[in-house]
Length: 256
Ligand code: PEP
Image 1: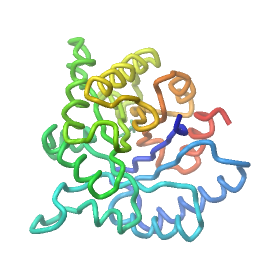
Image 2: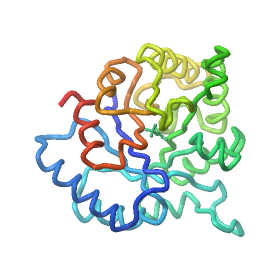
Image 3: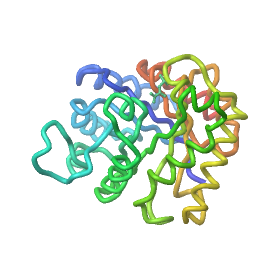
Image 4: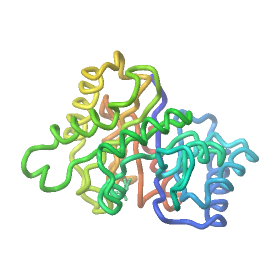
């Protein structure tokens, strides 16, 4: 079994200076813990990645670094884009792919996303593939169908079983709204993801693939989600912007 994992997706928030202050607060919090029984990953915006990577190294913090996106080509005339190799150089080990905000605002589709997953793995980055139904699909009872399609398509260029990957189930209607599915509903979706992974050739779900939940995660609801057997961790958006709140979520989530 891999350790529970907590990812902070800062979206388009925080300057370099704010990122460095956040890491100082993390260091103070971590120094009070006897040991860390979880994985913590921060996803700052592109501009803060390099400084964050250096600070994490300098302070020897047990914190992983994720980018929020990448482009699937390695280099070339793609103005405004950033490749996997560049993210590795900046200190990343992970990259979020297919977040619903990218699917909705930047027209990313399953085909773009599968190329990005492949490019991430090719650059030795662990993809954190986001999947999730919208409110209409949920009302129409299509949640499991949508999730299965997104997982299958997202991983269709991945060599079954060999590489490390994370999947984050993030119902779109739950992102930034304060609404969440029940822990029982989350468990059902995570079970479906686990079954889909087996169908597409991943012989064992753990430890190769971690399945996270994301969408209005808070100090109040994290424990109930983390108790479910197929929930391996959390992807936290708004509540991760405060280091103190994020660390509280981690602490409650691991039952520390
Ligand atoms: C997200 O956007 O990845 C997310 C989980 O956001 P929030 O926690 O704010 O709902």
